[in-house]
Image 1: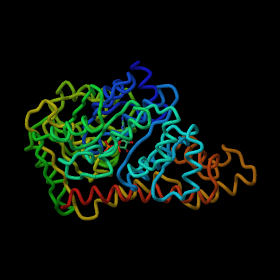
Image 2 (image 1 turned 45 degrees about the horizontal axis):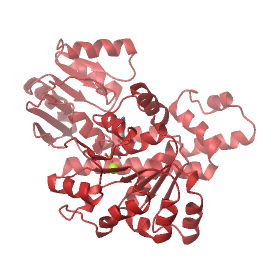
Image 3 (image 1 turned 135 degrees about the vertical axis):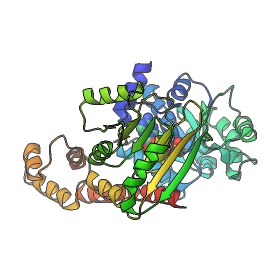
Image 4 (image 1 turned 135 degrees about the horizontal axis):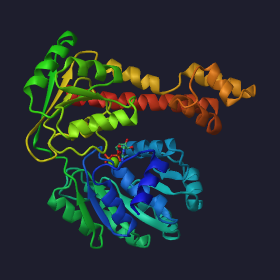
Length: 419
Ligand code: ADP
Ligand code: MG
């Protein structure tokens, strides 16, 4: 089973490892249990209700979500993976569009809708006539009067669940004190649910942000690394900088995705065995690394997303002992992330050129030469995929949308760090 989950994670989502908590939840869902999962924002809750759909046979996963923007975001991510079996019913769809979706529910793997839409009689009726694999209530705290975001429409979900045939049900949220949890279980009539709680609260980690001038960052880093409790991890944005900083610091090694597997393993094991006290690395470091006594995490550059930041500082203090997280920020530091984001997507002129060349019957390998991109370059792979699936205009829009999305996430990280 373990292997099946992992291969599905890789094949469908493109990830190598589960994040903390995901595997257990997925297992429980696949077994057919009702589940209540409480995990912090950014922990990866969506994957825990999406992945089982690829493991269990057939049927629709119906996801109730309170906000149009959340639904849009999730659909974008699902489509980006190449999954076409996803639809939504919200206030944005016209009556005809809704009818079209309702008439062809069997085409879909995931159906996102607002609680209001689920309560529309012809929607409820249509859903009661198809096989529903699972009903998911995202942001489930909205169901509770005790919660801070009570939504009256959520209160009917228990009843609606019955009307569509009482399918297996999963409730997920980031915030649920005991009273709210009880309310969720009761109102949805969850049947002896398995509860998973992964707290966002890591009181053992002290968070600090230091704003300083660019020229002073390196000196300050050296000081910090000397003074903070170790072992320490220093995160930076680029491979080159990871190497350069490790060279400047005492007792430090570097780690990044550009190294050979062998080198990476070697460096990692030295750090794990406490033979070296400082690891300077890019975000490539840490996934699946189990070292519970990391005392300090220092960010020399601002990460690209709040999720990444949480993930990275979460590597400190896993043993429950006090730990530090320090983010060093100088005005303009975000430009490096902007640069990296821009570099991850093909430029508009390259997209245009690729479509033009295809019209002329240019082969893939010729195209890679014309564009001066390696055929294995993720950007080139993306282009190839777009050529096969989208029109030129769609491809341009898609890239624009993705870039905007990433910029927005970076903006959130800035807000988070600089308030
Ligand atoms: P939330 O728990 O807040 O609902 P999401 O489900 O939106 O979080 O996931 C947050 C981000 O984490 C998404 O970009 C998602 O693709 C990513 N993610 C989820 N699981 C994994 C994983 N196992 N490895 C890497 N990234 C993951
Ligand atoms: Mg979510």
